[in-house]
Amino acid sequence: MFRFRPKRLSISQAQRKRTGLFDEGLPVGLLDVHLCRRHPPINTMTSLDNATDERILVIRGGALGDFILTLPVLAALRLRFPRHRLEILGYPSVASLAVAGGLADDVSALESPRLAGFFVPNGSRPAEVAAWFSGFDCIVSYLHDPGNIFRSNVARCSSAPFIAGPHRPDESLAVHAAELLLRPLQALGIRGADPRPRLRLPALPPVPPRLAVHPGSGSGRKNWPETKWAELLKLLAGQSACDLLLVGGEAEGDRCARLAAALPAGCAHIAQNLPLIELARRMQACSAFIGHDSGVTHLAAALDLPGLVLWGETDLTTWRPQSARMKILRDPAGLEALPVAAVWDAVRSFGWRFPALDPKLDPDEGD
Image (tube, rainbow, N blue to C red; front, side):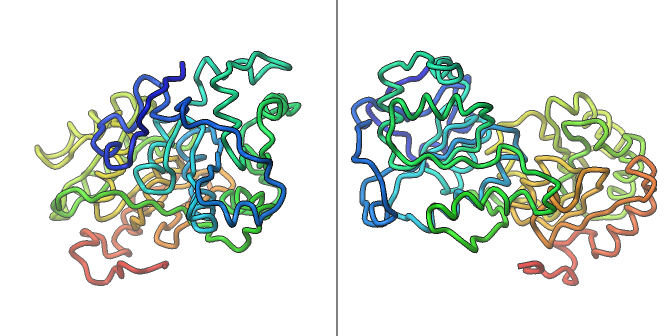
């Protein structure tokens, strides 16, 4: 359910919350009924340009990778309308990254039961939720909304311009997802925005040179075989002066623990099922990254880590990480056939042993 608080949660407070701005899926400090008010209709860009106390809402569901690829939208809005309050309606466990990174001011839960009526024709609209929607001067939505049901219900309580974007990019267009997600902003006069997701979080204390490794993904078909990962990690542990951060979530199960158990004691640190802000900060402190086609890989790219991505059959033009520091490695016979020797050769060609110890890897490469 929505919770109303007289005080909004600031970014500095959010950074101190280990769970990353959310508590059991509930919204965080948004929807303050005392602050929700109806503004005059916005009919021209001049209205937005001259505003000093106005609010823009971005609605974005989807998994981690989908949200990371939407970061350029938030960055473009922040740059174009620096005096506006930028808020997100999405999944707080993911969208809290944007608040921690300064790209948004607040996040509220899309899965709240009090929004249920907005997903059915002429559904119920709790007065406080209707008032919250009415308090925005522009709404940009990437929600999957067959039949425009959600949009129609929002229009019943808000006269703000409603800009609809794709919930999932069309791969047949042969355009990267981040660029397609930016296109709806042309209605706000935003063109030529940087399509590369970028995220910077408060730094952790320095750690020894460390390689972040994500040996999984949300789909088994995107995963390199575990036996090959085990062989590669043994090579990395045996021929480097650095340790490993093994990243995993629910999808990986016990895979990280099994891989770590086969390595020398103290070589691997497991980051399993961490809140995303904590995981991102740990990854940001690493020297490099190796992973699959996954949301964690897009997160690593947004954090500006150099990396190697073991790629399968996903459309590369649409979904590859938007960073020249991320190198793609594929095998014509498919991901499962990719040899350990090929991956090891690619690692060595980067000068990884590790990048922090090797001056051949330019830290500004790709920018």
